[in-house]
Image 1 (cartoon, rainbow, N blue to C red):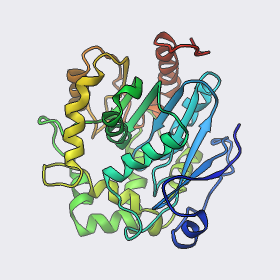
Image 2: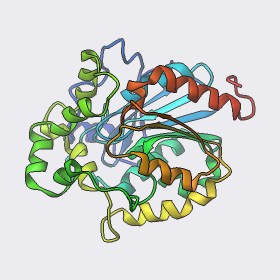
Image 3: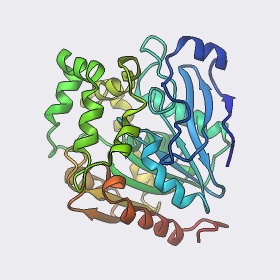
Image 4: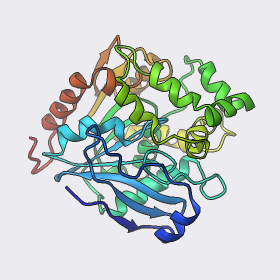
Length: 327
């Protein structure tokens, strides 16, 4: 297992970052639920934390809002004997630094740039498998649109990479957080978004108390919830919204991946990324292998991880790349 390191990519020195940007109360959570040693890459907005576990062809796992690399803990444990698992925490999330809006541009472009910088820094420029969830889908496929030749497999779960489907109504709870001052106050001051997600996003069974604590741990103050708010406020819904050009451009690029093996794993009780989003993925990726869980929600790896994780491992083995030990 690699030791924790701080490496410098496109950004400022680590000392300058840590002196001016809020960090989480935790850097290495002492929990058997998260038995990993992290790494950090200095970016202009702060230090980006990521996991780099195992060896082999890279499997890059991208989380959404308001989760962090913790969401993928069991998938990493299941794959790291055969694959190199790289799992970043987006800036402002998880164990990454938590800059204010004045020091980091919380935009979709910045997220894609951060991912590109990390993978270039690690020299991961070929044979990539992307595992995508929630905002991770838009960020990952935004990167893939820039570098389609690097992408060899896709694992997609309850996410999007295209504009809101015309049949899908934008949820009122997201509208509240995105567009109103009370919604902003609830997300920042009361931690309403993170707390609600820990309850609403699992539908088969409640999160165990220790798992719920780990999801909430990085977002322990209003200063540490800026990313949570900005992810909601920057959802691109119409052409005039910042980032919509990336969304539409990424959607136009999806045809480039029609021959890329793709696995769709879907919790059908997700109140955001529901059957409308799944249908849109299947429209673009008619070749995709799809598995659905009618009683599971947005956090599929929590509701049905013991069923979904083996599906991922089997999919990777059946669509193996040269020299993989998991084949």
